[in-house]
Amino acid sequence: MADSLIIIPTYKEKENIENIIRKIFSLDKAFHILVIDDNSPDGTADIVRNLLPEFSQRLFLETREGKLGLGTAYIYGFKWALKRSYQYIFEMDADFSHNPEDLPRLYNACAIEGYDLAIGSRYIHGVNVINWPMGRVLMSYYASAYVRLVTGMKIRDTTAGFKCYKREVLESINLDKIKFTGYAFQIEMKFTTWKLGFKIKEISIVFTDRAQGASKMSKGIFKEAVLGVMKLRLKSLFKKPKRYTGSNR
Image (cartoon, rainbow, N blue to C red; front, side, top):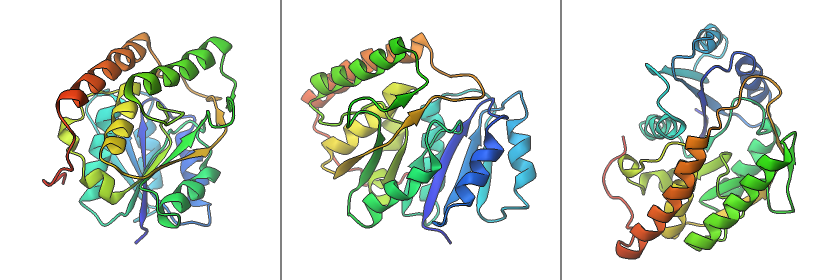
């Protein structure tokens, strides 16, 4: 069995899902993939379901009844992974904004270099983003700066969604207490990992905006991130995070 699982949440990704699956499985490093589909009306889950016989014991599909949010999809996937023997659990988008060729680099940072969380970062060396309008680039860049200012984290790309966790990290966080769903979820997970004292490394990547399908970004997601950062900081002032000793399974 492979030691690594890539979790890919989907909602209306019929143009991308088969291509991203085939690309990941073409890599030299063996990965398993878990697709979590939120009842996509375009048949995304059916495309994955048709690929299951071809990639038996490597590709897995979980479907949910509706669009429940990115954060809850990842929490679902984390718990699914922890019920099994995976040692490295990845977050990745379906739309090729995250280059599958970078997956082994994230893996090596944790498996070989000894880091607990590896982040594919857009902002280590300037801004490595392709095909975003300037307004969105500036919003994302300064949002990360805002998060660093409020929280004290040194992470450059605080809203990044391309990551590799060591199993121990996810076992040490009470996943039922993670409540945010959009960008705030990404921030909360990094902040919690950092406050628990885990070793974090950012790896420079080039982020390319989706060529096919529609973006899931919204004003509500952005607002949740802005307000959520304040809540995280205030909460940390009054309650020191402790490693979870219960079960996330």
